[in-house]
Length: 481
Ligand SMILES: Cc1cc2nc3c(=O)[nH]c(=O)nc-3n(C[C@H](O)[C@H](O)[C@H](O)COP(=O)(O)OP(=O)(O)OC[C@H]3O[C@@H](n4cnc5c(N)ncnc54)[C@H](O)[C@@H]3O)c2cc1C
Image (cartoon, rainbow, N blue to C red; front, top):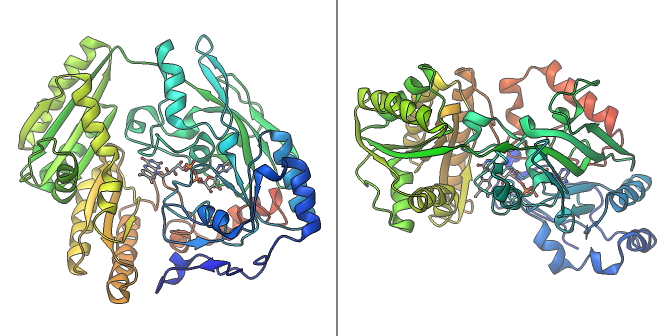
């Protein structure tokens, strides 16, 4: 079996680790043991089936040797026991929407896909939690909570498809994480299966729980390298009484970014503040025809929520700041349907960019919010200096920026420029006291940039944690640790 396909001319850090073992078939006697656990129906190993689990929304592909669909934590445990005994790598998979190569099985082995563990086990709004299996889709959690007047704040753009297990493993964020915080802030507890097959639980149903190490936080963002989440207890919150949504345009990008920095700096906390440059705005307008101002160099989608009177007051303060920063046009959504249209368009930005070229890289640099104007200037300057089209889309209120470059990786010359541009963008973010990722994670995409933001001892500490919990390196090997 040809086991790995790396894109043409992909530089080292985007090619992942070239696998050195486990590229053939899983031996029959081990396959037999695995099938005994899950039955033949939930065990795939035909090449055309495996190919569907060889990639995510990043650039690297690598074939697994088997894909298994567990239905219970006990099955996950048994599979991991077998895998550990035979030293077979196991990579968890939710919906495969990661944009950093996190679920790509670069050392082959087994992909454990959680799509059949998709039950909502308990909704308890009285005690404000929901218990779910890892394969539950984020949007289904929202749907389950809505009739009770509650919601689950983490709202990645991929929420219609991404799973809670994937969200936890990537510590996913989203637009309203500006006010509400990221996935880690909502995981009260979890059940995890370790590489050995041991089933452990951390945390509880209690909002306050200081019982030992906060291991659920360690597992959030660990990209499936420490254990596989089989159940999660998530904190939920009441829906706000009122929501107001503004679409604001500016003549230049500096004013747009300065408005963000001013609003946050003055102590106002909108639920979301999304920045789009002209390139992004026009790409969205081409696809959605919302009547957005194509001439505006920058725009902000701002959402405020809370008690009605407080929203009115905040709206007034925000409008003042927008005017001080020369906003051209400030428009409030007239209805829930209008508001939903704007958000659907915003969430589709990645897909809109993906139509522009055979490949797209969307990165995730994050800087202190006062540095947003400078970071955007740097991104634009770097893109221009390498002759590349760069769209800037940002959860700007928390400094989380997604520079997006549509390009063609089969064009070696262009791809080298893309590479260089991202090297410079990451270096610029680090210089501003920023970091490599606000929400997408490290995976294969950013592992080589870690020394820009962490010293050697800090990286070694992560490696030691990995070695302590998974000494054989069974879980998602070849990633950032
Ligand atoms: C259009 C688009 C928009 C996006 N917008 C956002 C955004 O706004 N914010 C954001 O944070 N991300 C965003 N993402 C990235 C991605 O959707 C998130 O990282 C998401 O959390 C991945 O979930 P998934 O179910 O697809 O996981 P996968 O991609 O399948 O896996 C991601 C990681 O989780 C691990 N994993 C999966 N299930 C488990 C489990 N049960 N236990 C342990 N590890 C597990 C995998 O091994 C892998 O390392 C976007 C992606 C796309 C394509």
